[in-house]
Length: 532
Length: 97
Image (cartoon, rainbow over the protein chains, first blue to last red):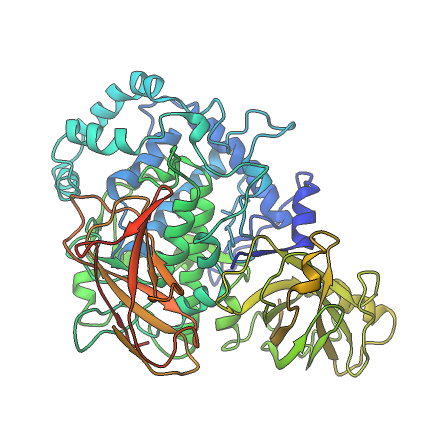
């Protein structure tokens, strides 16, 4: 099964966005977040990506001896990143957070916050990451002139990197030895060169004409997989006979260079999206130099967001979201010795120091998977989410309905104060070619006109590609704020906030011949309405 | 072989593998060809990969029939595919959730 793209989001993206004044939160005396990380396809996210592009170009232009040179910063990942073990999440958090601070300098925007790539909602590489008529030499595109071929790279970078290596501390060299790089020559020939994308034209497998994730990555980012990754209630996956349990995190290893396996979020969406952005010809993202492709940081920002979603879920339920007391002495002291700070200074740390996002000064807007935790807590003063089961069949121009009430307080608020986001879960028909799935909002008990011209029309989405025949449920995220607001303006929204959410299929006008023979019955399972 | 007992929650399979080549996908399926899920390694190197690794694969509830089911594995690498060897696919078990 492949992903679906809500047309309202894609339209915003394709229409482009002027550089907006991106608000960031005032820091309170209580130390609340000063920066809000948003989806990279939101208007605010697109604006942040303009800053990001400027910074990446500036960092590429730095001398290779400068630790803020773009490749030098990416090289940290090759030298030190954990994969396939329980330090996976905690190492990448500071790696992304330090770069966020560095981008504020080179992008000349103190308000910059790293956007996240919500691949569940947006299973494609956004337009901003490709060359365009506006940005023909786009620094976010690995085929641009900023990215050297091997010969040019070796000529410019070999000696500065060797000088850097020779300046490593004994402790750092010990880490590189554990990683399989006992000396500079082995690092260069078995580390840098095999992971270097030699031909810039092959830097990323996706193109502006074909940006979508493909299987297995497009399957792995779907909400049921994300929710499966968020479901565990222990930090570490425990393997071995007798006591095996699924944890949020990958299994324990002896050191952070050792790969012993992968839990769901690391192994499924994380790994598969990495691999899907390259192919047999090459690509940065499938390699340990993956962070040369700037989209790496949006990818890992979403990984970090999901860790924060899980942490919040766990702590709301009264659990620590941490390694056990027995595990902590082995987990916490693990040294991470290669980070670089915003002043270019070494910023060594240990695993136990980065278990929360608060010290880094950022927070996340809700994205895919947030609703799994949202029901356990109030969200910034808005009442808990409204949920409703439907379990009703729908078809071509035949709707199925779930009835629920807007969260308390949201019925009275205007659109500028709150946003209403619906997560619509359904079992699609066996084939989705030629079909579009439409969501409508109407006053409770009223049947909406099933047309995109209807005032109750909230949005629609289409699948790209074919179902794999597993009957997976799918959850699409639709912003229904405008539709709710039209009901309010028409005076038809009840004071109680009682509404119906209707899901129906319609034809796209393409592949119409499939509609005659393909069974078009799906099942509308449930809807969660989230206010924020 | 795994023993499936139906329920409302998705299953989680613990898939034991040997070192897998970079860029490979280890596809799990039943003898009838029903695709269950896959493992896609990332970041492993020969120097850092132990002889055995464990990867978790979620399987939606209702995908597999109740009772004993055989799981087979294919290896796909850059468009070519073959049956996984005994050193690549070591076994699979349902793990507690």
